[in-house]
Length: 111
Length: 115
Image 1 (cartoon, rainbow over the protein chains, first blue to last red):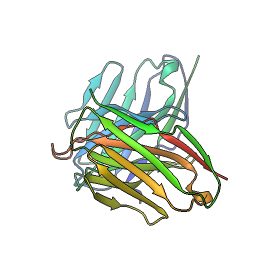
Image 2 (image 1 turned 90 degrees about the vertical axis):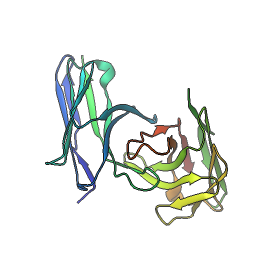
Image 3 (image 1 turned 180 degrees about the vertical axis):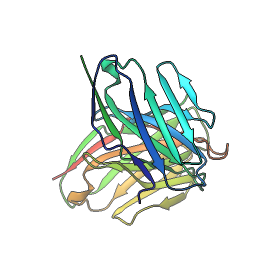
Image 4 (image 1 turned 45 degrees about the vertical axis):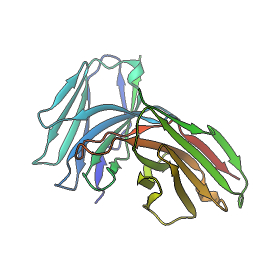
């Protein structure tokens, strides 16, 4: 089983749609969680850290369920500029602060 | 504010040639530093990480090596490139401490093609 698993995608949605990405992680001792966004042929960029109580940043909402070892990202009112690959990332609090990246879910928002 | 630089941006090298990619971080001190590779259409693979000058941990066996000669400088090298070394090489940094909540910030990457 992969340490971090994401929906395989791709997701093709119209502008204005709400889209949800799901992610599961295997290590119950995981301490911190992130969503990164990666545009084509660019470096990953931090989108949101995910906190235990859930957090929201504009149109983006992240949720964490430690009991189910599940992380989600909800994008409301999607824009063309949201088209990218979304990476679920887990830090196990190990030495060196290593991150474990999911394979990513590609989102394509169409007019 | 902190910035991270990588060069070159793109590189085309013949099989068997040496490699040196450089990464530098500005605006912070004693960062954790990381080298990743992303093959075409694939996820990120951690190659090396460093928690201090001269301290290198290797994640996967390969013909690459890393060095950290200065606090904010991280170098990825190879003596002889293989075709399979082609990919997108990303350097990243994170703050030390704060438990596990260490977001990583990536440089712009080097796209390497080995022919």
